[in-house]
Length: 357
Image (tube, rainbow, N blue to C red):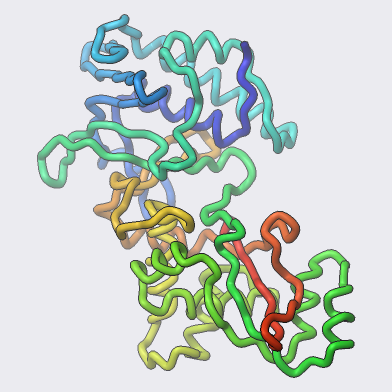
């Protein structure tokens, strides 16, 4: 049976094939190009298809990959064949992208390729931040270690870095409005209606995040992270500033938290973006540790597979800050954007998501 998937999901299969072919994970330079001189040798790639189905691809220098299923040797696959598979999958993804395909699509012969790899699914569980797990030789410590990497594909539409949900609503108190004015504001149904409504509200005061788990996770990043994000959310809706770097600069100049420290807000935002990329999820209790503890793999538009290794964390954080923007998620799905009354006071919930530019 043919599998239907989107660009990002097909890209995860492509990454698996490309890394098995090259048996190296190349790092990325400051100008986002492949660093031919610095790479991580790949010893094994590990996949958990189900709780009781474990696949291991062992890399060898003789041009073959040894495939094990639940520790039992299945067969060897030569890297020349894998390279052909990788090229075919990439061309198929690029072809669909050129046709402006935004949803799911099928790739002919993909099921045959996946059967050869003993794969039953394309992507890792949505509950995990690591999209691919491998054992690498770490040139910085000269040790072998197993680590997970998150995957981002530049082939398709810009992916979302921080996904919204009802758990990511921020509650603001609304003051300075009459009942008739509130009714008029809530009746606004034009395109960009939440921004249009917020611009009619004279006073917005942050109250709290609505989900306690999300709040506790934010505290792991910074004790005032919820207040900082609330300021950025207000500016996003009131002034239509979307760029993450620009938003953090504006907050830095206004210094609403009275921190009086140069560049403190961009620094805080970089830490939040990095935490989201590597481990933090709003509804799962987070211990502050990176789940994608290897780093971030990027599939470039030319098919190159490169990575930010976490030893180069500063460059990775700068990349995230300079390549992301705020966006408005679904209003109906996440239930926000209208003024409501509670215990004699008026409030509005605002939400956000962060996606790559």
